[in-house]
Image 1 (tube, helix red, strand yellow):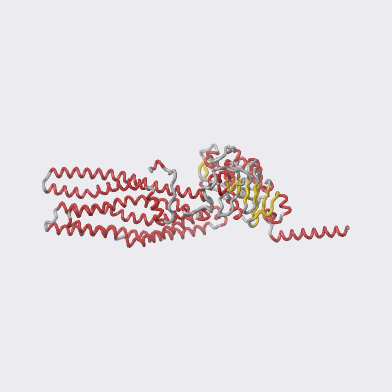
Image 2 (image 1 turned 90 degrees about the horizontal axis):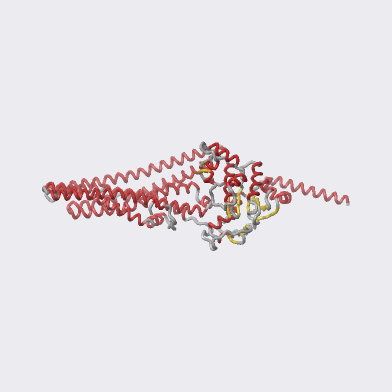
Length: 601
């Protein structure tokens, strides 16, 4: 896989049983790129490590006054230089390719999982956790997957050079062969502690990211209630904890780095001291001593990759564990379905609550518990938070349809819709039937003032459709964001549209016009609106009251407001005392009326 071929047509099915298993799965799925990186790495490292042998041969040729051997050595040096240049160039290219393709595969897996879970994702994992996994964790995982092949090439080079020194000069090669394993493995006892400190730093950084994400998302509310400084103080404390953890982790890694510098230096001193003794005895030549000395010095380069792979694994292991945890989440219902892909039509019925939304009608649902209303809206869209009896659309269970078909049939807009950054044209560029124009949808959602605000806020956009929307629409008010999200849903024109409190942040005059526009634009289409607004309820063809998970009353708004106390309590916000007083007044009135009838009789 090359970078220009990204994204993957199918990122595959990951092994998410643990973090190390996930890393191993990623490495295996990039086997071709890893082998290519290994080959170029071997060419580069071996060419670098061969330079000391060339220098030794050149010195011996000069000592022996052999022009032929000196010319041959020059040719070997040229060959090594070519190998170094080619190896370094294509190793870097292969390494970057492996890093980017591994990170892209993980990002595609996370995006696919987010699309499958929908709103259930943030119910199981904090939004800040998702952000941390999809940004920093992806980079660390890609780093380790890429570094494995380079480390393997470096390790093989160390073995080859050590064996070559044993053959070239056994007396000095023995010292190198004994010292190299000590140098390479000396840091292993420190790695568990370094890994634990890296895990602590990663966990604290993840919590700080979650806190920052949640604080930014609720900044408008925090300013309104005066809690901005409180949350900023919490973030300051969390960031200081991250700093202290990072310093503790850095101390351990600096110790490991110091050992990686100290031990090769001691090995070099040992080789030089022993070589001088052998040279005095005439057992080694000057060229052989220079060759062994240079080879040991050059070996510091591949040996540094031992430290890098240790760091890469220590930092990527918690990231892989967190990523595997997100990828292991499953929907309560299967995504493949057991039926052929289709978009059924007909009445929408929830057997769990008894809620019926007749086809082609506007049905309003009143629910005293906002959280229960949100769960019911998700279930109507085929996204149940927990297993249960499937919602039926035209008698077809949504759980038995493929996920794409179920989402094409029923669109759910929750009470806090997200607006992506970009132009208004891009925001409204959604899969749609083509029956509803953008201008009609914007007009029905009463977005005239929103368009004016977008044009005023964009210096270079005369056309409102080219005006830019900031991230999550933060430059707009809550009501303006709601209306743009409603227009986006109306453009989609699904078979069934489920709206959860679509007008909770707009004034009553705008709400009345939105109700008329919604009824007009969705004429002949099935629409379900979760609301307690009398303006919307009065325009609905059918109103259902859901109490304690069941439909307890069905009718039109005026009938229910007059005859159903529980409905009246939710819609008019009457308290229990007010309801009791009203019931008592009604009872007294009835008693008085009965007494008057008896007296007249």
